[in-house]
Structure formats: C-alpha cells, structure tokens
Amino acid sequence: MTDERISRMSSIILGWSLKIGKDDVLYIDGFESALPLIGELEEKARSRGATVLRYVPSESADFELLRNGTEDQISSCRII
Image (cartoon, rainbow, N blue to C red):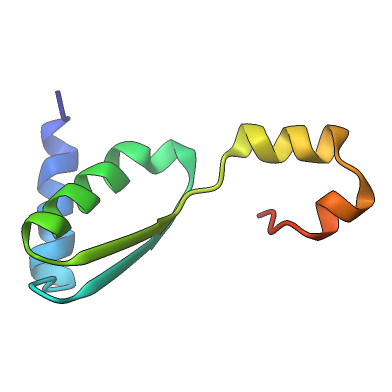
C-alpha cells in the first residue's frame, strides 16, 4: 500500500512540475532511501506514456565494494 503523501507528491512532480507525457523520457537518479517515491514516479510516468530510466545505487553494495574490493575494482566503478 502506497503512502498517500508519496502518491500526491509524484502526481504533482510529474503533472505540474515536469508535465510528463507521451514520448517523454524521465531519468531518475536517486538513493535506496527514496525507492518508495522513485517507484511511484516510475509507475505514473509509464502510465502517461513516458519512458523511464533510473539509476539507484545500492548503498550496501557500495560499502561492500569499498570494504573488500581491489583498487582496480573500486576505480572502475562509480561510487557516490
């Protein structure tokens, strides 16, 4: 069940702020903590006919890479 506040916020972002519609492309770059909002934005943007691209790094995977990765592995990845 989606929090009503997240649902309203995503509607405002897509409809009023961005005016997302058919054939638009929406790129979302966010964090795991924002996944509820990101998921709602994706769902609503697709229902409006937009293409959605997103990048949500895994904070736990980044931590694991930094803790156990080699210098080559770490230097080849984008870590925020």
